[in-house]
Length: 117
Image (tube, rainbow, N blue to C red; front, side):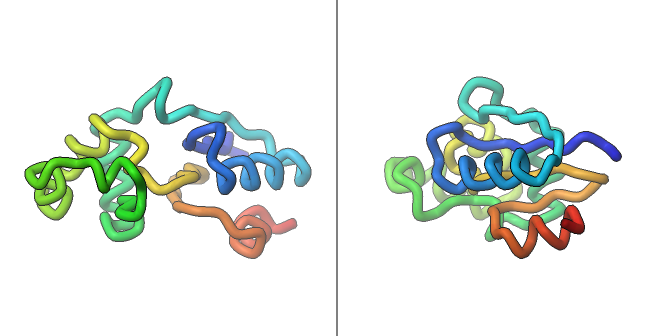
């Protein structure tokens, strides 16, 4: 089984729930703190292609509300990756990479199906 990688922020409740679920279910995983190790352009571009900007961009976050109008309009264009790299807390959490698949968010149903527990 390819190693599961979970991207997020340690103090995010949803990320904590996902990490706890993975640990309790015996699913080995690597955790990457988006603040300490921002994703690369290749990763963000791949995530955007895989799940789409409407799923990946957290438009309800404090970071989004503090963005300049220029950065907000960039999020709707082809350069969204630049803004997400500069402001990784704009990325909805958690982002899960596993078996060449990407998912965003956490529900016990989704993780149970994904990992067949």
